[in-house]
Amino acid sequence: MNRDLFKEGENLLQAEEKEKVLHLVNQLSPKNHAMLVSYGLPAQSKLLAFSNTMLDQVQRKDIGQIGDTLDEFIKSLSDVNPEDLMQDETSFFGRLFGRKKRSVQEVLSRFHKAGVQIDRISVRLERSKNVLLSDIVMLDRLYETNREYFHSLNTYIEAAELKLHELHNETIPALKRANEGSSDLMKRQEEEDLLQFADQLDQRLYDLKVSRELTIQSAPQIRMIQKTNQKLAEKIQASLMTAIPLWKNQVTIALTLLRQKHAADAGKTLTSSANDLYQKQASTLGRNQFDLQTLKEIQENLQMAIKETLTIHKDGKHTREETEAALLDIEQKKLQA
Image (tube, rainbow, N blue to C red; front, top):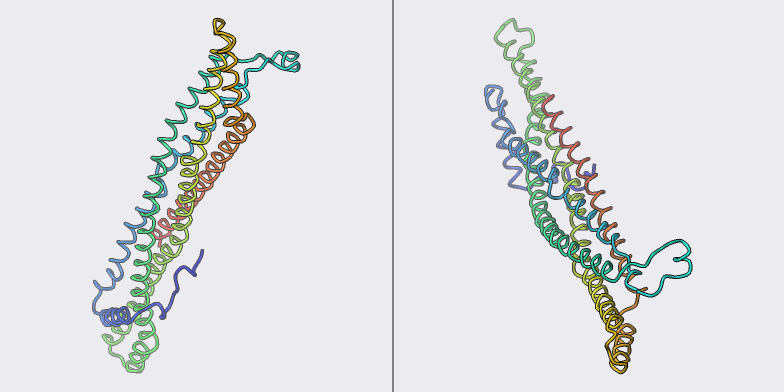
């Protein structure tokens, strides 16, 4: 629990808040039982609604679906092997262990299918990123609302503590001195009522402090969830804007070269000069724009980025589960109090 996020005590109370405190102290009267029952209830009621909002945010199902999308992304990338784009003869060791070279059509089909799947997944990731960004804004509002409830509860708590100090150190001792040696039962009852009022106020003070504890614990939890959302959004955006387009560009070049080579190999009617011209163009294009090792590195980096994003998501899910459990535990304690 990070109490530095909120400072407790008198220093927190501004001039306007101190006026509210004095007003509340004057309202706390042993003759006003209704006031005692409802004391601090407006702030607690708003906090209850806030707790439900927090739980709804923590339990969001669309955030959880990001993990499924990332798993699907990794599977799509795993289904294609950059080495299949090189249509050279199978190596000696490949033939020795029975590894067959994939046909050109099979390679084209696999990469085309992977490309279509990744495009669809990219659309879903874009939507998820937008949800995360909107959640970051909403969590900022939640944080500020939580801060407001903290200040409001502090006002009620400060007033209750001042009133209890007044009761225990001034009012009750003065009444006891006044009733000393008296046999008046009504005066004894007045003293008993005052003591009971002090006990009830002390219980209300405890309830309000439990509510304030919820705001104190919620502050770092909100920030942790927000930080995870921000990391996820940044990772997804980096993949969408850089890693995926780079991979698609390299694959497109490789597939184009593969189609051209296949067409040249199949085109037995090509003239020698035309075929030589194609070979020269393909060789130049390959040297300048496509390199198998580069594509492999790009694909490995993309897979690594997606796996890192998935790890962040899993850590965030764990944080949300812990936050949910903490909120439910505090709510349960409030009901038992």
